[in-house]
Picture 1 (cartoon, rainbow, N blue to C red):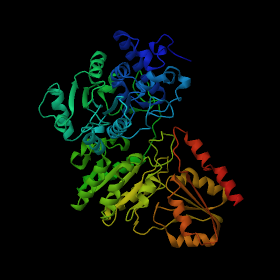
Picture 2 (picture 1 turned 120 degrees about the vertical axis):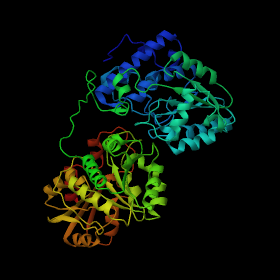
Picture 3 (picture 1 turned 45 degrees about the horizontal axis):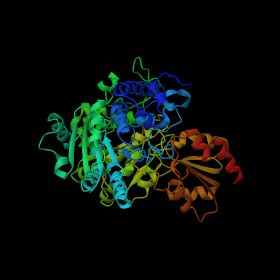
Picture 4 (picture 1 turned 90 degrees about the vertical axis):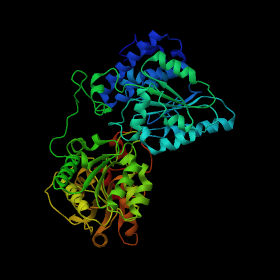
Length: 580
């Protein structure tokens, strides 16, 4: 039920209702919005700091402009909780029974006030330039705005967008939400440029935006509703490109989020009284801790090794490397293309770069994976996190990494079934200096296993023998599903080791000795591991059953449901085998 029937927010079903409020009421509304963001994030988890910092700017935007006719593109859109509350979706924060009614990012299927499904960074300005050009072509006159921040200006596409936005002949407003943070600290020369602008109240002559041709405006307090209303009123309907630079406080209204911005960019469910997570943490070693232990050992041994990261050290637990071994750590900002090209350059000079990439963000660097690394056959090492099926937003799915990397020449993509195997693969990848190697870090809980060393120059499958059926379970599918299915069927259980290099001799043997061969993978089925096996064994007298995720975008669908929809439960697979 609605927890706060007395809230002003209950009176707002669209921005038209917001326009009836005075300044004091809007300030009260801002307090209500922050309370609801904190309560829902404490219960469910979600983006916290970005949403707390953008409240006043969001209220001012919807007070001044006429959405959905006037259009705003929210970069990344992880800061749109206030926007959603003001555009008819407040119940998803007011009533815990409706917490799951909305997605965490903008979503055109959800509301006419959202224009794109956006969850990745640096795209807003480029999208807005296309919208502005189409508006001009169609003879329309609505306001087009892009709001970018949280380090998204470190992404290359942001500069491509700015380059074109600066020559738009009519209305186009770029709002730079400058809260001095990315997910982690902002990095690079842009930090210096923005600081000079802030320190001079926007008046320094060293202004990269005016040099590009923008009409530049500055708001010293982007968390003041009156200031933001005046700023937006001044740029509304202006017939040329404008860059509006606003200085805001990320995490405003919740002191722990101000004191530790990185930890509060996105949060798991937590206790509002103590600020401690209520989610039990895994005990013992994890995929992250194993990778960090390997890195520390090589650094302390004096190896010329570098951990490279694109603005998400917390995803991997890289903070210890960052703090204790700064000479062996480099954050390129939110710029995956730069991270991969940077690693290629390091490799060429004889260093050992270890890239730490998130599966869903890795797609931004596809050309560098191919052109700069694979085509030059450079021995870059890449650890890929969060690659697998999950119940996340369709903008953050981790089901494409295998298809991207595995189908490029020269790349070797390894998939460990235990933490010990992850360590062995990482040690070999660092030592070998012939080819680029990616390692798919387990996303599900996998056994620790016994430590060992191994040469992965030649892929050889590990087999636990059974009868009539052979089950090839890649990576964390081995313990998550493979062992259970093999036990029920009395099947041979195979660890395929690699997502893209086949052990053809073993496959021939398995095809001759079995009636059915099953492949299991935690990734997209089309173009994946299973199809490679099926293609190779196409002329053999054996039935092949491939299991992975269909080529669809799921959006906030629970993992259990995704597995069921793809017939990836134990009972479903056993049934399919019996029918086969």
